[in-house]
Image (cartoon, rainbow, N blue to C red; front, side, top):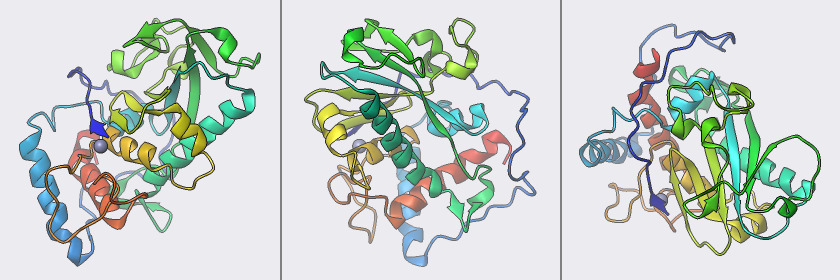
Amino acid sequence: MKRRRGTALLAAVAATVSMFSMLSAPASAADQWNPPANLVRPIDEVWRHVETTYPNLYGFRNYGWDQIMANRGYINYCVRWDSSQPVSAALRDRIHAGLARQFKKWMDVQLENGQGYNNWPYREIPLKVVGWAVRNRGTLQWTDSSVDIYVGNINENAPQCAPECGRFFNQNGSYPRCPGGVARHYDMSLWLTAGLGGGFGGDWGQRIGSEYYVNSLNNDNIHILLHEIGHSFGLDDFYDWTPTGVCCFLMKAGSAAQITEFDKWMFRDFWRHLKSRYGY
Ligand SMILES: [Zn+2]
């Protein structure tokens, strides 16, 4: 469950004029910050550790946070189906729903009593799967045009959606060479690999085993995917140290299978330290 970031592509996110109204305008720059007393110290330790471990922490501009803010409140995905197993329309839709359900668990961390915590501006983050990438068209058993289909575009020995439509490759937020334009761009990939144990996560998306994922679709928590989504929002691994007084949490691989109170406050702390770049 390694954290893996893409090469640093540091083009600033272009500020675009929004046509969508946000739920709440930033009324003040004041922080809302009230973690439980027993978590104050370990949360502080985590942030110090992140700051010293990642010198480009504040320069990096493609966290999940940046992607959502560039979109003004939604996220688009490409599914990289790195498997020869056939996919029916029903399975396609379950794969989408499972991803949306796990993504929402992190987004809900940003809410308190139904309102955005610490100036978080979005109550809901719609998730769309806009494309599927496969080696052979015949693997996909549907004929409708609800998603764009990319066949035989191979990168890192796995099918990918068109780079022209990918946020990782177009971090200025415009997609002039994407056939479907901005509406069909994808921010992240859900890369499903046959036979893979564990996973990877980064600004490019999440990579986990296709069998694991399909077999977990009925589970409330698909914990490897949840963990890897955490990485896409900047959260670190904890292979070599443990914050004071906390034993078990999702980002400490193998110690928890759901987002815990500690994960929640780490997540909120990342937003707290980045939000000024969006004017909050
Ligand atoms: Zn990890």
